[in-house]
Image (tube, rainbow, N blue to C red; front, side, top):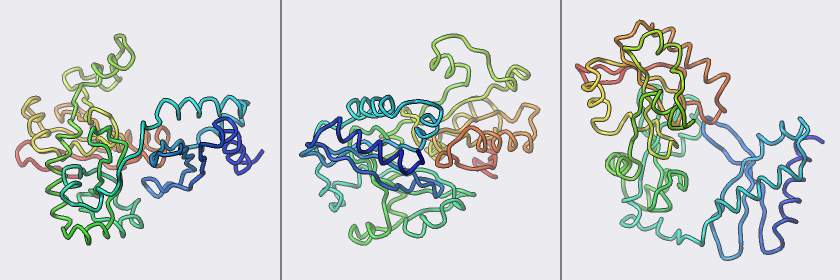
Length: 298
């Protein structure tokens, strides 16, 4: 079975499982870094929101022997665990007074998103771009968002600078940052004491820290939260490197260690090439925060 037959079979089987009151659709969804994914949306009657379940990663599992039935069972479980309780009134999106408290920003790679950025208000920073979204749900899970396009600014009658000012205030409040050392985070995730990375064990005076938001989704933007980097530099008493491990988080490494910038850049590029999906890559470059100037350089 080829890939197109596979996704068609998944759609038909999910539709049969869920019944005629459910609408199952397959959509080509443009993600970060010009990545196209096949997204399955499942809509129930009287509801205008649906979780999107991406099918691309299931095909290798099918080729390795996993049955369609088993894959569809997992997809159905994901849907039932994440389906919204009801509809959301999206008319609020045309009312600037209602939407302005939900505008947030996130970071993406500039060069990898040149085509997309033509239709988006954005700000350039280093080799990155700041783009803007609206949180659909004020309870903020960091995932239910609408990307803001240029035409939205026209009927809101605002500028990109206005968006940036709002997002700079809203995002830290709606999506608070979390900063933990690597060892603490790994212990939290795996529930037991774990060995630190080799680089840390060789230089225990320069541990590595993970910066993201509390949801660990698109948390790399936390480097632009007011005073977060300044306070961290004061806490460790030195400049530090910023390693863009993905769009979801960055790693902070005190410059007091014996790491070279070339070595660190090589680490980032290795992770990007072998461990991340195309949509998760933020940058191949390493950044440097100066405690004296308070600036990030590349």
